[in-house]
Image 1 (tube, rainbow, N blue to C red):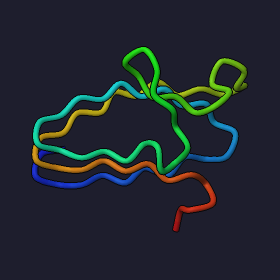
Image 2 (cartoon, helix red, strand yellow; image 1 turned 90 degrees about the vertical axis):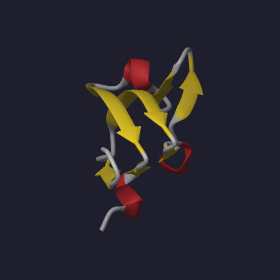
Image 3 (spheres, rainbow, N blue to C red; image 1 turned 30 degrees about the vertical axis):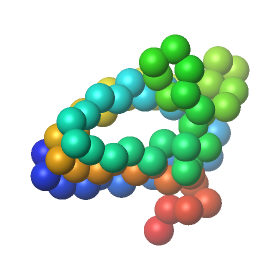
Image 4 (cartoon, rainbow, N blue to C red; image 1 turned 60 degrees about the vertical axis):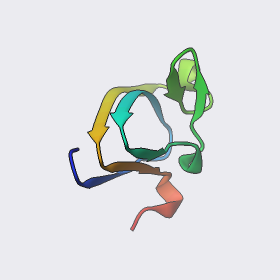
Length: 73
């Protein structure tokens, strides 16, 4: 995203790994339960998840927010 925002809804049971970078931006991965480690963010239990998504997120002057399945509208 550039000068905008992105909200991503994570389905229950999906293992997600996110590599993120940005300039003058904000991210809220921990609000969806993701934890940081080794330069990436992952859902707890990522290694054991039956279904996985590998994402790269980049933003400049924007924001990215992940929502867990219970918080999606």
